Image (cartoon, rainbow, N blue to C red; front, side):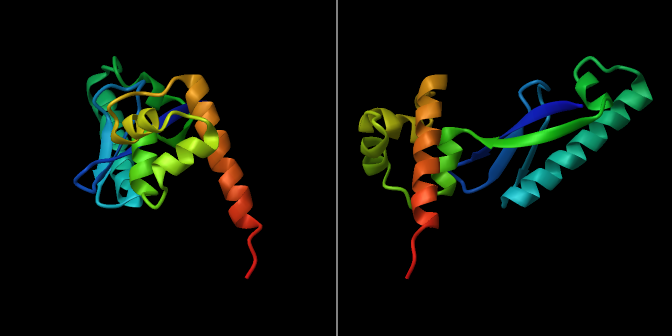
Length: 135
């Protein structure tokens, strides 16, 4: 089974979009994440119908095999969805330059693979701490 990566973004207009990098032009949008996922599912169904009608699988060949979609956030989309993070404080905590982290948040710059790993490990560490909180 093939795993396709669905990149979740949240726009400045508040809408979500999801695209699959391996399949140009295929995306879903919506006011909520579930709505964008449903819209992507409908787009996939239309793409498969297109292949069945025309025989042209130039762009959609990955959809003709068994697949799953792994949904992931781009950094900008993550920080827009979880906007309660103080990005500068979080950057300091995980050892990333605060200005650089703000650039990742706004989408001005893209993080390298090692920076993404560092940020993700920091998010997991915060989640573990929050999970252990008791009142």
